[in-house]
Structure formats: C-alpha cells, structure tokens
Length: 149
Image (cartoon, rainbow, N blue to C red; front, side, top):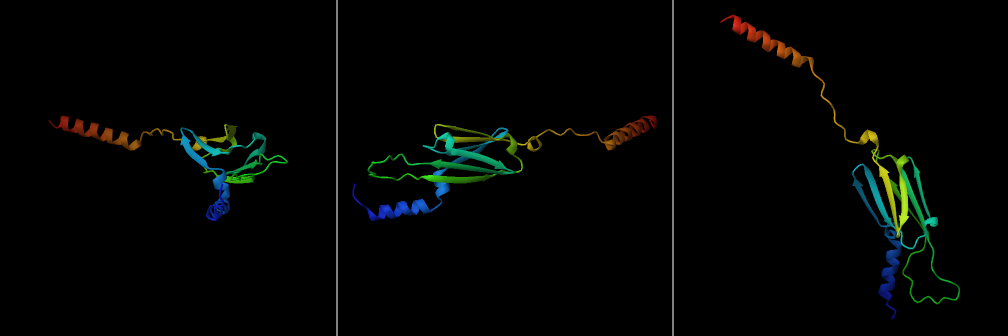
C-alpha cells in the first residue's frame, strides 16, 4: 500500500463531516399503520445499543470498539469507533409508547405505531332536518298540483 496524502485528507474530511449520520445511515418509511426506521449498525453488539424515548424524541446510542488486541500491527483502519448518537423527532401522529426495537444482522429496526386518533376513519353523515323539510315541501306542492287539476 502506497501513502496517498490526498486519500488521507479525504478520510479526515469524511470523519469530520456529519459523522453520526454517516455511521448510522437510516431508511424510514410508513408501512400501513406503523412507522418503521432501519439504521445500519454493523459490528455493534446488542448490549452496546441504547434506545430511549422521551416525549416525541427517540435517542439511539451505539458503541463500536476496535477489534485490535495487544500486539496487533495495524495495517489499515478506515472504520469509525466510539459512541455514536442519533435522534429522531417523531410527529404528533405517532405513538412513542408503542415503540419496539430489534437489532438483527447489523440492522436496528424501530417500529412506532400510528396513534389511534391519527388513523383515517370514516365519518357517518348525519341526516339534516333541512332534507326532511324539502321532502315535505315537494309532497305538499305535488298534492297542491294534483288537487288543482
């Protein structure tokens, strides 16, 4: 491996620009009556992940440590280590009390149900008194027309 000063500069820039988003890339979507978020956490032990909810803010903390052991000679190291934090701000239409989290195959899956009050629902139309009045008027005018014949 040759030393490339520009490559080292690129690595340094990558580590300083938005490190949390880069280390926890996310895909978020709505699927039916729930919101799902998938965050990549490769090489992170489930014991090193902490998910908390306070009001409408979900905080994810994850820690990844290097695989080095004493006596190892590091040839290349492009991985990021340490503690990473990311916050998700939930809309009022979600129920943070129903949040579930699962870490499998390096992907943290969060599922948050849509609040019952925010789900679409059908509203029944109330019968209007006006409709009843117009029917009576039609009947009265029809009987007046038939009696004038």
